[in-house]
Length: 249
Length: 275
Image 1 (cartoon, rainbow over the protein chains, first blue to last red):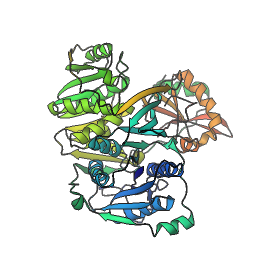
Image 2: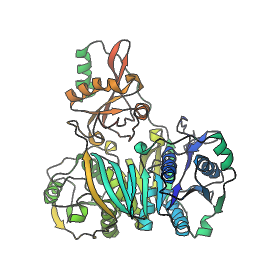
Image 3: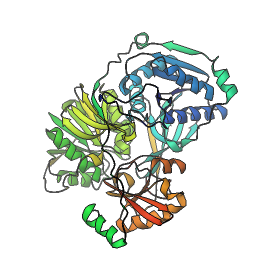
Image 4: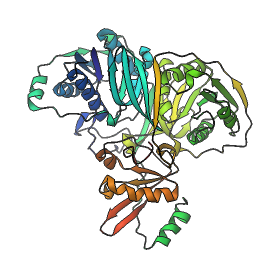
């Protein structure tokens, strides 16, 4: 079974994001970038399937500017076999990415597609579901456990009330939640080896996909500042504040 | 212009998060139709008909919707959506899975987790885990939107009297099969819909100290949450937002509240609470 993993380049999770003064977006110049943490979990899950003899090949795909290649290299250094880069300077929105991935999947014919549940930049939580819909495939979002079975998959999902277990027919699409696994670090020898692994270059035009944005960002501002805490002297003062100031009891 | 609002329900009652989405729908403007898709969900539809501001309840009672499988719910939304300018739902596990799927099949974008309505096509949402507030405008014919409950006040649950109309389902796609649900046993409210959340962060030092929070939470009828850093340490995530969050710390002077503040509380691992 071939497994396709989609990976996104985002501002590193440890970087404190700064909103630009002109309100057009957040500062990305000279900011450390990294693979979206949920995408790392997706790559890790694919690697574990291969190590368990359930997957034969892992293809890592990223869509975006030239720099997205670095994120594909990270996936290759973790252990993916080859990469596909859909190159465009258009700022891609989830629907456009889903359409691009659908076109790549039509060429690659994987048995399983794994994505992160959401990217930590736009916090959309859409691409996997959109892609599954466009493909007409079953989907399991927020997966915390994945089992490969004859002709399908059994997936444990994190839902509002606890966990839900569903069975999916193959081929299927899964999006990862944090508890699915703990991603490995790439070793130095594997980082060196990854430099020789192939990355195929494609474009939206070559795939016949219109990536025009549907949603316009009008402005981006900082959230209201958090008020600093106060120290109360007694329990009765705390209860008074809870009752009369916060109005919660 | 009319709005289709997907109800979150348990077949008997409408979940509170939907009431916040009713307020968001009212801000957009236009007739609001509440879609109750479930199995033996007549009681939920009747409860929905009492929400003021709902013009009509669409009840789709079919085994295909018994467990809220995304493929089936999305297919139903795709079938009904062309008659509407907006399709809304409160942000819940079911809507997060089904709404983007439906949006893609309608060839429209989704606006996720809005906290404000500026106009019928312009909405406010948080990005970068709440570190940026983004105003976006949609150019799509149908706006598919999920609503963050804490961005809007809850509408009243009773006082209205809308008609309940039965609609036919869109069939079972047969792509997925529901096997079982493992509900975390907790007397506390669900984190995602709790009015009050008692939250701990690094100041609580370790997960074991969360027992202190649980006792406070039980007194207030609150859910227990944790900051992202704490939840990550405990191997868990799923950020949620509540209307009121208390952050507690444990330091040399003892155990105390840091003050109602802003928050990115997360679920700690399952034995602490229902996530």
